[in-house]
Length: 358
View 1 (cartoon, rainbow, N blue to C red):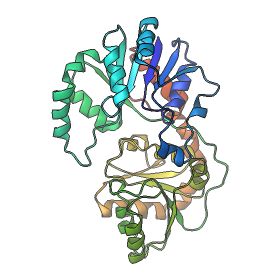
View 2: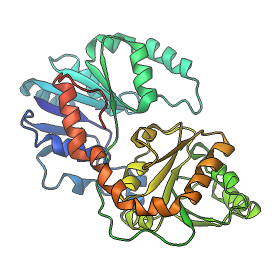
View 3: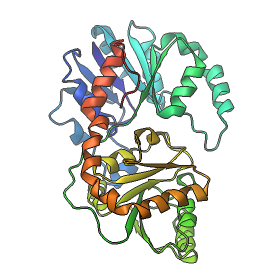
View 4: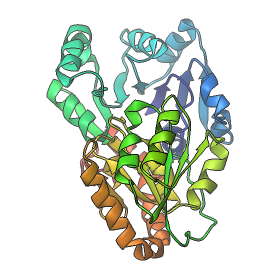
């Protein structure tokens, strides 16, 4: 098999498993087609995705012409194509349409529909109006999180739907666990969908937790005032270069992702590989990474009492949580590139086995 990935940019949350696919004896060549390396806003945050391809066998096609893509379809035998975000990104959709004229296998790699501001029935309606005609041309779906899996299985029984995940580069832990008060960390944009307000409500008058926020956004001023009103011990650090985030994480015990909707939430992967305990809302795809209470806890996204209960559990068990830091690092081998790549190639090879990928 020869794999061709179509993305809107070089995705740091997919390259780790794509890179491992090049080492699989079942795979011939691996191509990555993108219209750009990165977005300006990502570069401003310190992202540099081009180095992710250094020393790999991935062949990069940067902003190719349609003629070049067509030639690739013609020349690549046993081609298996993967399209990420065919409706979100016009370039990817254009390449998907071009592929329809050729004998290739097609898979969609996708997050669940955005239900934060639009009910699920509207997504079903849009799909049947715009995309139903393509069902017979798609061999399978790799869906991030349980919502995506349920959604695409409900649409059609024709295609295979595989639970999937984002994968991040593995950072090595170099610092011991923190001491003293519980150290709680949030890394992300301060926007309404991220639901940071619920954390400020759950931490009201809590003297046992120090809360650090890395990120910025239109909600910052409102959240700073709420933190002061609720007597939350909060530090707002603003945006930090991505290269500095792993060290910031190691100064904390727990990462929280409280979103009202997150298709995945790759920051959870990053935190877990460094041994952090995680608290994730039930509206985040990355909740699938929490195997049991050794890894973290899941709370109801709109329920302050549910989050308070989770935070109380952490305060009561913080010494054991700290003692299990190295154990959590060891457990993350299941969510790293090599393991996910093996599962991925098994799926497209029609290998029969346990559907669960972790």
